[in-house]
Length: 211
Image (cartoon, rainbow, N blue to C red; front, side):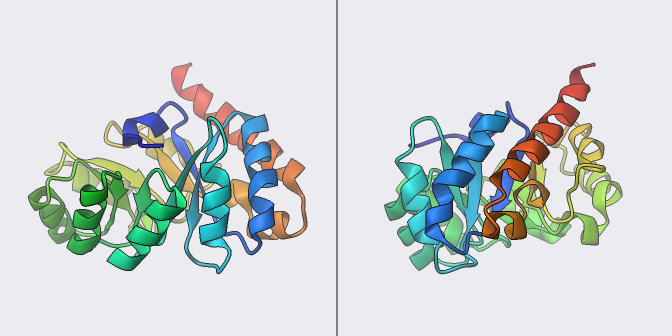
């Protein structure tokens, strides 16, 4: 499934997931779908990640991407596995160019104005602000958005239920990445009902933006 990042914006939230067992991919997807959030970024932090992406890529109406992508070889592997989008912790021009050759949207991480200058040079419109909270959170992002107001930022890193709306209220933030609703310990314990419950709470919080 080929997508544009705009496809993620109706939900305004992307679960960032580390899976230790590929067999947990389908139950996780079911838990997220039950909450009304049919998407996930599966990070390449575990040996099970590629197989998990393969399993979810074949699932109807579920949007799966690959995260923690560092190099061209990993781009090739995740695209072959069926990832619909790629997320990277940093801004590697070779990763960006490889994704473009494969026709896959890429969301590289930025932390500084220098990173943003390179992102603009590469023709990017969307970047990941990472790690958001350690970098200064909303205050830092608001400062960056001044001279780079044409960019759109997806903050990730330290996003929680209690600060989610602080980010989403910024005009330059179409969505956030978060892992609190897909806690690794819950998945390992098979507590997928907790994933559904916490994801519903997050979507209910997001709905407050329209009030």
